[in-house]
Length: 236
Ligand code: HPA
Image (cartoon, rainbow, N blue to C red):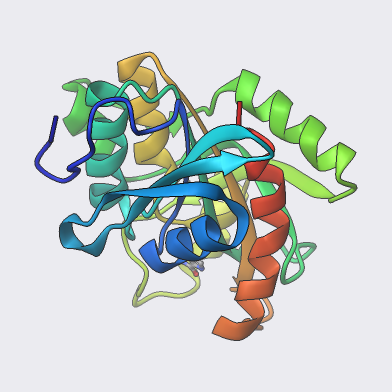
C-alpha cells in the first residue's frame, strides 16, 4: 500500500514510531540503535525505517519542520498504516529562565494560536491539546529508570520561527504558562485525537529566548541521545 507521502509495504511500519524533525536524524537513529533495519520511505527524502531495539519492533521517521509537515506524515501513519503511537523527539527554545540548554521536557499540554486544529476538525476555538496520558506515564517511568531528569510542562506550538517582535514570547509565556516553543506538537496531538491514537513529545532545549544562549549542531547531536534513550524504551 502507498499513500501520497509514504510508500511503505503492508505491515512494515511498527505500532510505535519515533519522529525526529530531521530525516537524517531518523537515519542516524536507525543505523546507530536498531538491528534488522528496513527502510520503508524515500519519498521527498523523508526517510522512515523499521528495526528492532532490544529485540522489540520500532520505527523511526522524519516529520519535517512545522505543523503542516508533521500534520501530513502523522495523519497518514495513524490513519492508513495502523500506527498506534507516535513519539516526537525534537528541540525547543526556552521561554522560562529556569530552563537550561540540554534540559529535556516532556510535553503535558500544547498551546497554540495556530488555526491547524480548527481547520482540521471543522470546529472553532481549539487552542489547547493534550498528549496521551498513557504514553506520558510510560515515558516518565523510562526516564526515571534511566536516571534522566525531565521537566513536565506546557509547550507553545508556533507557526512562525522568525518573528518580528521578539518580546512577544514573554506575553505568551505569562498568559498561557508555556515553558518553551517548538512548531509541531499541536498538530501531532490533534491528529492523534481525531484518529483515536496516541501521541507524546519529548524536547531538548536547544536555545533560550531569555538568555540568547544556543547550542551548535554538533552539541545537539549529543544532547539528543538522552531523548532517544527514553523514546527507544517504548519499543514493544
Ligand atoms: N522557535 C521555534 N521552534 C524552535 C525554537 C524556537 O526558538 N528552537 C527550537 N525549536
